[in-house]
Length: 532
Image 1 (spheres, rainbow, N blue to C red):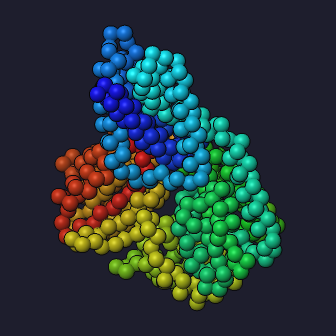
Image 2 (cartoon, rainbow, N blue to C red):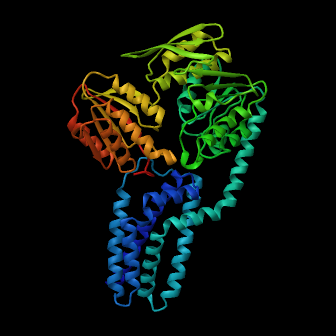
Image 3 (cartoon, rainbow, N blue to C red):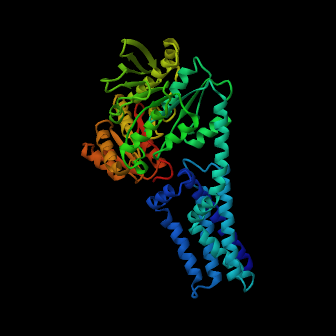
């Protein structure tokens, strides 16, 4: 019977460690397998000192105490491990682990390291028989559970030379494919925000005339582009639209050195990812790595609505500047914007000759009009007719979670801007919400992230703006709670119309109890599991 208890405790400990290692790997993956970013998340989230982990440490040291019988300690460890493992196994995550080949390699290597730790413990402490060995195994697995993040980073460090070799092989294959397609026209798109939407809009327009490929989903890193080239790019493609993301200086240049774009669009330079960029000047320099990489005969299309774009001269290539809010100095301007129940009507004017292209779209929001204007400028430069552009714009579907509007059963109108919030986009989303005059207007948000030293002030300003644009505000989570609440109260929103909840699930329940048919709900941002 005693042996059975020890075996059960060891199995429960193994179960707990396995589930915890998968969870840690999920968070490690969300931080791009970068130790510095993962350590920041560990520090800010308090994950290393969570209640379960501290409980595990207490049990670990309690079991080593000469005053605690091994059997009692083993039973306690087994019960804790079983309970903790079941709780974590049942947890739901917004962005679950994707078990890629790299993730598998890290997981297996971490498991091997843990097995070595457990083996050493069993050899060192288990020389008094089977029960002593099982006790040592439980203790080792409990220790590995408490230090799973350390084991994971160690596994990644061990695999680093192999990963570099694999990545270089794939990179060279992609470079070879691109070099073989001499007539392929490559258009790159970057910006603090708006790049994904602009990519979709330009793809819709160019596809009217060319065989066009765009990087799918969030494949906007060097490895994402490499994968796109290797798996999706075909000899018949004529245009390749590459979305380029960045969180550090040099990230855009690295992708440009691979694909060598002919044309580029810079949609925005704003305070996004300031935690890694540190300053707005670094953001500007990084986004303009794209423009600086274009060939002499290329074309840059840049958004003059942003001060850090308007004040940046471009002399190396022909440059088209577009604008919605600040038309002075722009070559393409969006005018006569009229929002309708079915979308938006507007005109794109080419300032040089006054030529006007009138368009209708299902999209709403000034940000979408701006992104469409950029795509129109590039499409016209590539010879796509106005008729084809107008048809494409009219047929463009709303990009999911990017200021899309839909009605749901129950009579609610949902403005879905949940993908990724930023100071400019969130203000535009509030403007759209404010224009909804039927029923009450609800804001559901956890605020904005990755704004560095401006995090608190930007979220406070967002709350202040929201106070006059919505009737009810539901603030989700703790990450930006104090800043948003301060802004809402300073903006004059009655306290009885402000709610705080711990999760989106709780927010949904509250929303259902407070809303009525005809009301409108704005979902502004949906933080991943790396933020609470």
